[in-house]
Length: 144
Image (cartoon, rainbow, N blue to C red):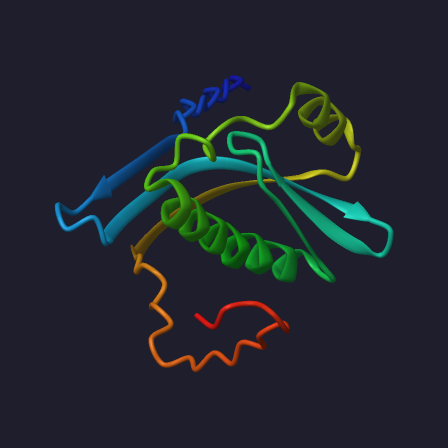
């Protein structure tokens, strides 16, 4: 009986990608994160999701909840960085090697690939126009 060899399937690794596009008005941003690797491990009764290609983590009671919390928190963190810095340079960095090694060696680690596209509209804080100040004047001090 002839034997058949199975062809080994080799998936080509796709590099993680981060793209930030900013509209000329400075208010509207589009952020794309693609092929970001996230490791999910049990953590004292809950689950911990740590990005490897991006140093961001979240926790949840179940794997789906940890994934959802990762997505929601990541979007909020991106929004915050855009508001504070106007770019993502300070945010997009790999997780520290010690964390990556520890998580990847965890026997129960689940490896997931993550991609996200998010639109952000950043507004400056509204000025406080209608505040009435009552200033107490110390005795002997001139009034304003």
